Amino acid sequence: MTARYILAIDQGTTSSRAILFDHSGGIHASAQQEFRQHYPQPGWVEHDPEEIWASQCSVIEQVLVESGTGKDEIAGIGITNQRETTVVWDRKSGEPIHPAIVWQDRRTADICNELKRERLEPIFREKSGLLLDPYFSGTKLSWILTHVEGAAERAASGDLLFGTIDSWLVWKLTGGQVHVTDVTNASRTLLMNIHTGDWDEELLQILGVPPEVLPPICSCSEILGMVESVPGIEGLPIAGIAGDQQAALFGQACFDPGMAKNTYGTGCFLLMNTGNEAIPSKNNLLTTIAWGLEGKLTYALEGSVFIGGAVVQWLRDELGIIQTAQECDQLAETVEDSSGLFIVPAFTGLGAPHWDPYARGVAVGITRGTNKAHFCRAALESIAYQSSDLITCMEKDSGLHLKELRVDGGASRSHPLLQFQADLLQSNVVRPDCIETTALGAAYLAGLAVGFWKSREDIRRNWQEAARFQPGIRLSEAAESQSQWARAVECSKGWEPR
Image (tube, rainbow, N blue to C red; front, side, top):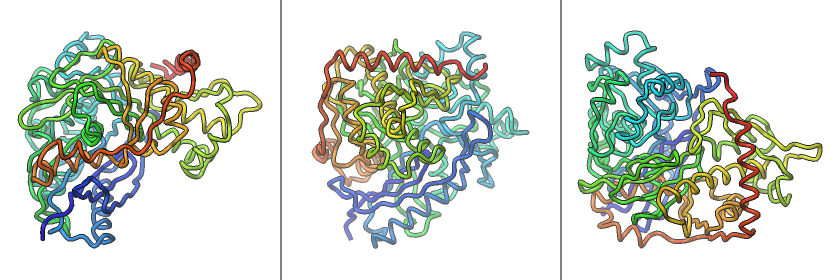
């Protein structure tokens, strides 16, 4: 039987998903399962790698069974993943030696500050394109090697393996036969030279990381190995990997320099394609690899918001104000504005352009008349404000004005959010038919490797607009709102004692 689908494995921060895509880029079937978040100390966030693996196996089985799809109908598998989340495991037993340290985790803030005091940040900026921040994998790996007894010695002797979640999944899928990562995930570790595409010896030495623990770096679209350990997909090729935000850029068909997308997920991540040029940011953005294809690297500017859609989860799970995300939208639409309320969701610090790991969340402007509808609206507006900050920096770095912003991710279903985003930006915000562009990008990368799609032009033709949001307020109103937001952000900074 001729293969009809690509299976995308989308391992995110709060859930694992499996999606079958057809040749048109449409979703044939999907399954999703949330897993537990662990907060052992303030500012610490951990996952159980084995629970991630179990949840991923569960959704793969579910999507196959419920759709009645056999492996002979699947051409290959693409993987996309939460980036920077760090796993270290034993090469022989395959058992993790510590819980996965999640990208949101801030425990390595002191390590980053010490490196800054030693004036080493310019070296990391030049070579890795990144700032020294607990966000990235390198300091998390260094922390594990230092704090788990015997880990440094075991790593140096080759008994331990490091990986971001893509590496962990490939290792598990292939029954421990393949240890690998791709250029996009490697570019988020503080350990790779983005200009050469290789691990950098100087950066490894600074962070005390032995090269024996690192996976080889591959492109985003090539056959990496065959599945051995999951019933129902044995023998299928793993043919594509990309970190979630780069996968979304690819899934949005942002193939030309200057094209940009924003993913509204747990966090918000805005990327602009800069072609074959790695543009150094003067506004605290990141220079990163967009993808590696056919022996060539494509670069991007990126801005990262740590708490995006997660602020809605906070309203639901911690405050109990709402039961569902849809209820947040409904309540937000019952009021004309937030009535002067600003929520800065710096629950794990501030990302770009502030990079303050000591910031904490604040709500300012509360009056006796503030109600839960205002909280819902202010929460959604906080997502748009943070994204607008990133776009302002990106326009300054690139010298380009965004004519439109392509959007995706779960929170992009929110009409009040996207309308407010268009108002702030004074630009069009466009949502495609398929907002699961993270998984779709992974599917496209795998499909190119196995010939399911012949070229990027095939992919470009698949992209279809579903909704367009145009500015509905004057520029002066948008500027005043942004100015008030900036005042609120200042209230959140430096709150946690250093």
